[in-house]
Amino acid sequence: MKLHGRRVIPVFYGVDPSTVENQKLPSSAAGRIRSWRGALSEIANLSGFDSQFIRPETKLVEEIVEAVFQAIRCCCSSQMVNFSSYSASRGLVGVERQIEQLQALLCSDERSNWTIGLSGMAGIGKTTLAKAFFDLFSSRFEASYFFSNFARSMASGLSVLPFGNLQNDFFSKLLGDENGRAGGRVSYDLMLRRLGCMKALVVIDDVGDIGPLKDLLNGQYCNLFGPCSVIIMTSRNKQLLKSVCDLVYEAKGLDYEEGPRLFRLHAFRQQNVQTEYLHMIGRAVNYVSGNPLATTVLGAHLFGRDLKFWDRELGALEDNPNSVVQNVLRKSYDGLSREEKDIFLDLA
Image 1 (cartoon, helix red, strand yellow):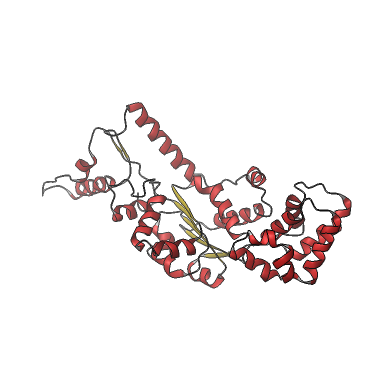
Image 2 (tube, rainbow, N blue to C red; image 1 turned 90 degrees about the horizontal axis):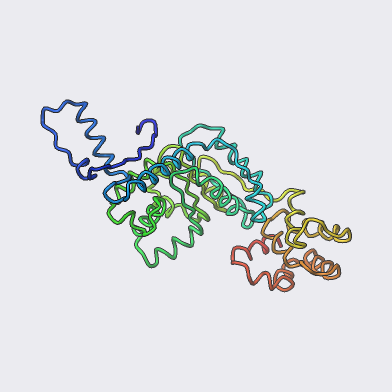
């Protein structure tokens, strides 16, 4: 089972797991019997279903069927995903083609595990792309977790908690344990054994330093998990990603069709616009240079304004971008994070 990466779902029906784990064998027992007994002892340490604690029996059957269904669904990962409804409900533009490219890359190589890096400047859509991939594909994995703001979370977390606690919490969330203690009876080693048998999808967003990442994953990265697992990391540091990833994908800006579409979505809340605004849209899209975040914020800033206002604001952007960031777009600018503010300064 280990050799082929097969999943085992133990069902302890009318027997205590400890009885299975602590079997007594006579010294004369044959090697094959010992091998099977050893396998059963190991199975007793896996997460499974215990008829002593799941009552009535109909509930036990329902939970087993659901677990098997989920496992089967996880194996059917070769099908292409229909992205249309997902992107439409979230107002996403330019992400669908990149999701399809990532999926094609994963399907083109039958290696056991993948570690993928998403690089690019701030605001280009690395986190959005990673989150979309996670939302669309996480149900096809046995364990999944999206670790947002990794650099900030590790820095703030380590200031109040030992690293071991943070790592234990990470493993527990991957295993789906809501109380953060992996069932309250499970040891650290057992968590590692369980994860080593599971097909996992882990997204680690905003990696700034390789040290905490390496420590979190015990230096094993994807090999910490079972076959066909995927780790996705986002970072502006392309060299960092190259040092640990099998593949580094450069997040792409909006193309000539996507840029105007995203801008209209935020500047007009619709795609049909008056003819006299078309030239202004071209100026705005040219300024933001395909950056999705800048496109979104500038479009929202111009929403509901007349042509004179548009012309004045865009003229200021073209003549003195820094001044516009500091003054004309002050209301929008103040609501941004430090990283998002840096994007506008980079554009300037």
